[in-house]
Length: 314
Ligand code: B12
Ligand code: SF4
Ligand code: SF4
Image (tube, rainbow, N blue to C red; front, top):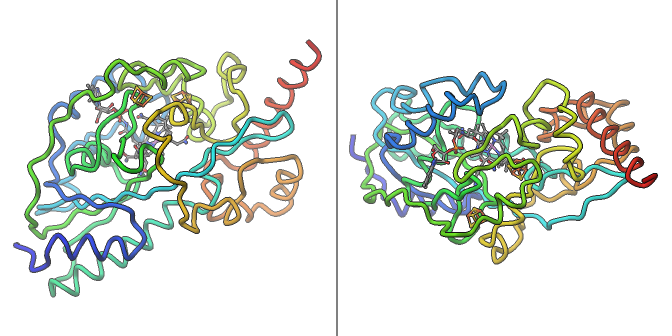
């Protein structure tokens, strides 16, 4: 059904809800992204993320029958890059404040209610952020919000890679732009590849088995020693391939209250923080670190401080 709402109205309302940019596209995933995804799985680059083995990721139309448009939202969260410390573990910048999944779900609810009111129809949209099986970056590129970097992240012209994605599928039909070509745009730059301490990246592909972010956030197993010894000091997540990227130098820091360290567990995890969480595990609630849980955070911290002591002795 043709929407009786203009693209400009959608964009204005989205920005008023706190998103930083918006793009619209039809919800079909391009064939080259489907092929790249299947090859990635064939190479077993997804580690133990069994949830990644879901072909539905390639067919968003099946998540909402009759979906005509995908509206993709950008949230810019850039925080100051911080040094590693021997007495504390560094938290990746997206995880220092509130959990973005909750932030996005609240906004998506308001956006969907608004679309329903404006169109006079119910059940016309389904929101997603991260956990729904959809190839979000492929849709964002198609919606004109940026391009793929060799570190596999979406590079937004204005905000670089320190952005988070969310979106919705809707049966409403909007005029969409011709999707830009999915071209390699990093040229000869390879700063992210060279900066990655575990060589987890080959251009445009990430091997989760080697990635610190995977081991510290997603994997349920102990971090293998050959990876742990290359961790320069992260307690949760990893930003090294983003800090290295020239597209992240110019964008300003995000002022969004949700991503400020004061709103969550902050930039570093120290021994005192771990003791407080052990006494009161609800401290993790509403923050991204809940995904790791206190046992895993404690193990990562112990391995980091042990490594630093060994280096000091040498
Ligand atoms: C699984 C996953 C992970 C895994 C695997 C990452 C990966 N690259 O696949 C792990 C746990 C390692 C991870 C880590 C992180 N993640 Co993550 N993750 C996801 C998730 C759930 C799926 C990603 C996916 O589809 N992977 C499948 C593989 C096949 O896709 P891909 O690597 O993107 O490969 C594509 C391109 O490289 C391209 N391609 C392949 N070859 C070529 C060649 C050329 C020439 C070109 C141009 C393109 C191209 O095609 C592929 C398919 O589109 C998404 C959310 C979602 N639902 O989409 C978030 C998501 C990608 N993650 C996100 C974030 C923030 C992170 C971290 C920064 C967190 C942190 N600080 O630790 C790190 C960054 C690590 C990195 N360099 O990617 C954001 C990224 C936002 C952005 N600006 O891009 C997302 C979108 C979540 C969100 N909703 O905001 N993540
Ligand atoms: S998140 Fe860290 S470990 Fe993973 S690819 Fe980027 S730099 Fe390498
Ligand atoms: S560091 Fe260079 S190669 Fe890597 S994503 Fe940024 S521009 Fe591309």
